[in-house]
Length: 538
Image (cartoon, rainbow, N blue to C red; front, top):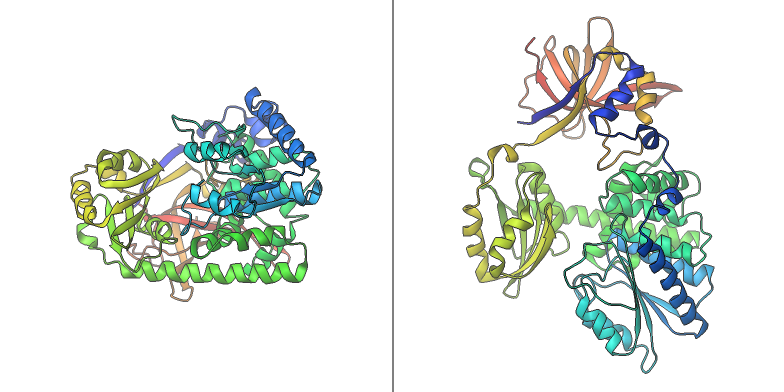
C-alpha cells in the first residue's frame, strides 16, 4: 500500500503548468530557479568568515610551499572525500607544481572514520623530525582532540569541512568551513583561491554534491548544472572511463552521478580501501585509467553481490514487523551494512538497523524513513552504546554484543505513528492526459537538474483505459501498458510492478507517473514511467 500525497489539480494549458509547479513547490524566485545564476553569484553571498578563511588558508599553504614544508592531504573514503582530495591534490601538485606532497585516505576498517591519532602517527612515521602541514578535506570538524594532538607535536593544520559543528569546535591554524556545500566544493573554492585554472574539477564537486545528498537548490543547483555541462562536453578522463565500463551511453544526468558514478567511487572504500578511486581521478594515462575503471567496476559488482548475499541472510517475519527493524549477523560485512539497512528501510518502510558482529562487539548502521528521527530515538538509550553518531535519517554506532538484546527490548517499546510507516508518494499535480506532449517535456526539462529537493515532477492522470498489457524483464517483473483516453494511446512502463493490483484489458486506471524521452529511429517518443497505479473509481 502506498499513500498518495497529491499537492495540486491542474486543468489549464501547458503554458501555465510550469509556474503552477513552481508555486506548488514553494519556489518564489522562479526566474532565478529557471535561469540558474553562476557559482560566483552565490559565492559573493557566502559569509565573510568563509571568504577570509580561504584567504588565510591560501597564505599558510603558499608559505609552506615557499619553505618546502611537506604537505599531507587527509581525506575521507566516501565519494565526497575522494573527490575533495583529488581536487586539492591536483591543484597543488599539477597546477602549482609542488612535489613535496602526499595524500592519505583512512581505511574504514583500520582507522575508522575521520581524523584519528592512529592515522596521524602512521603518517608521521615518514617524516621523522620534519614539520608537516596537514590539510583535511571533508573531515576533521569533530576531531578536536586530534587537531590539538597535531599542533602539540609542532605541526600545522588547515581544516576544511562541511559537516555539522560540535559544541567543542577544533582550533586548527585555519578553519575553512561551510555547511551550504559539500566537502569537495569547499576544496574547490580553496583550489580557486590558490589560483587553480582547472575547468573540469567542478564536475567532481557536482558528483560529490549528488552523492552526498545535498538538495538541488541554490548554490548546489548551480554547481550540478555546471558540473553536468563539463561531464557532457569535457569529462575528466577517469570519470569518462568509469561511465564507459559501466555501460552508460548518452547524456550524463544527475541520476548517473548518484547511481552510476557514485556507487563505483564508494565501492572501493566499502570493501577495501578508497585509494583506488582516488588513483582513478588522478590518473592521466588512458590505458592505466581504463584499467583502474574496470577494477572499480568489478569491485562494485562484488559490492552488489555481497549486498544481495547479506540481505538474503536475514529472515524477517513480514506478518509481525516491529516498528523498528533490527538484524545482526557474524557474516555481515562492515562496509556493506549501510546498504543492507537501506534495502530493508525501502522494502518494509520502517527504520532499519543492521549490525555486523565481531570480537564481542557489534557495528551498526541505521536508515530511517521520513518523519522518524532515528538518532533522537537511539540517543534515549545512549548508555547502551560504546559510541554513536548520525542525523535524523541515518546513524551509526558501536555496541557491546551483550547489549544488543537490551537495545532490541527498548526499541520494541518505541511508539511510531502508523501513518509514518506507510510509504508516501509525493505527487505534484493531477493533469489531463491530453497535456502529455513533447511540448510538455520541453517545459519540464526547464526544471533540470533534478535531485533531492527538486525531484522530477510526478503527475496523476485519471480514468485511462488499458488497451494492451504485457510483461518484460528477466523475471517478467516490468509491466508495459498501452493506455487510452478514447482518442489517443500512451505507452507506459511500470518497473517492478506491484502484482497485487489486478489489471486486465478494459480496466480503467488512475496512474501516477513521470515523463521520459525515448528516441528511436530518429523519432522522439514519450514514455509514462509509472510510479504507482490504482483502479479508477469513476
